[in-house]
Amino acid sequence: MDLAALVFATGWASGVNAWATVGVLGIVARAGGSEWVPAGFGDWGVIGLSLGMFTIEFVVDKVPWLDSAWDGISTVVRPVVGAVVAWKLAEYGGELDPALLAFLGGGTALASHGVKSGVRAAVNTSPEPFSNAALSVGEDVSVVAVVLLALAHPWVALAVTAVALVLGVSLFLWLWRAVRRARSRRRERRE
Image 1 (cartoon, rainbow, N blue to C red):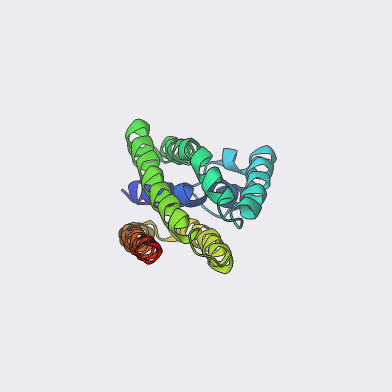
Image 2 (image 1 turned 120 degrees about the vertical axis):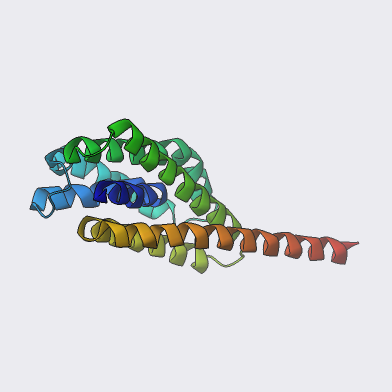
């Protein structure tokens, strides 16, 4: 059952940054650092593609509104990557049905992607650019940390990512309420 916890955590990470997730898994596979990661992740083509796409996302994610456009495209990409990562981990781990774990990984990726996209869209309403860049860097660091944690301690990573999802939904709701209140006040001042 450690595999289900690993799939949940890597699904969460894929929803935040799919390319960083695959890149970290690839580097770990190449280094021979985990019995969980299939060797195919360590292929230089997989590592190169994922790190190249991560670099593009790293830059795009720092630009307000452009990051939301990227998130729109990623609405398809991130859950698919989460499902494929889960399927590959399930095939390699062999404990549970790969289709069931793919559903878990893709579903978790879709949930964390939704939270990320919503929070980023709310943060984009801020007039200063620094919060967007800081949030983006924090997301990237958290993805790397969660994937490495999941490989070492899958249940701890599951707990961390489950809490992150709940906190993310709470933050999203709070930010959108704040944005609506600010817009309402601006309209009232104009009238």
